[in-house]
Length: 353
Image (cartoon, rainbow, N blue to C red; front, side, top):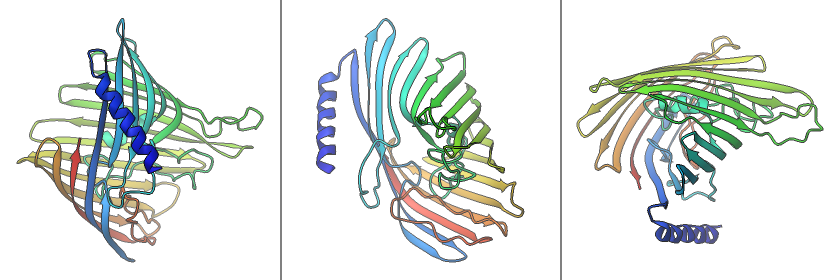
């Protein structure tokens, strides 16, 4: 696997070197982010390295070719990497798309983020990563809970998708997405594993506001279950402070989970202060809400390198046991019993290239 990947990287790098011209380009890019993290619940604790405290660690290749007449072709191949332990393999699981772009916008085919999840990370001061991240995807549950769905009730990414991204329209932006479940027509629930989503927003000057809706088909071959997710978020940059807020909800299979977040980023010295308060409310179970408060700071050593620290506290109601979802291939979250509280902190460095 490693030899194959090295060969691919060498070929793409060579292609990039030979294709740099006025009509085409290929770029190697990535993020290496690793932190020392300590996570403690009322039951136990764990300490170690985590890969991705401010930005998920990744490696990718992207390119674009000018086809003339205002038309361009592009590709984007991006995979997650584990800086803490090197990982056990590499695949382009974060994004793998090919596109046609022009005055009409962009048609994008492949695996990509869902429009609904883009709001979750955009309007979270921590970008939904690290100990401070709101953990706003799959509020009802992963594929083991939302049975039949490709990656959960409100997943971050979808495979086998067709996307249409609007061109710039005076501050308005948007995206339509359909993901194929690729099931045979002969079964009763032939839309099993499919998904559809839309996002519309407006960004002008300091204001950014967007709403999104997505539905994913789960269940069994014989009977379908629709999981529906929608959210809305807003931010306004005053210069000295950028407050933001969002509301998200997921519903399906007689379950409902809501999420509220308010937060802000503040330029401070050579870096940025981040803070957020969130609450996840499980509506189909009594006394099952979770509250989280997080604060952190990132100090920029350069445009590409940042030192950072963050601390977060989680308080669960008697019937809730939500914990941290750190980005790591080896550091697991501590065991959470119902009603447990938890505290986590991390110190790390992020370098982008």
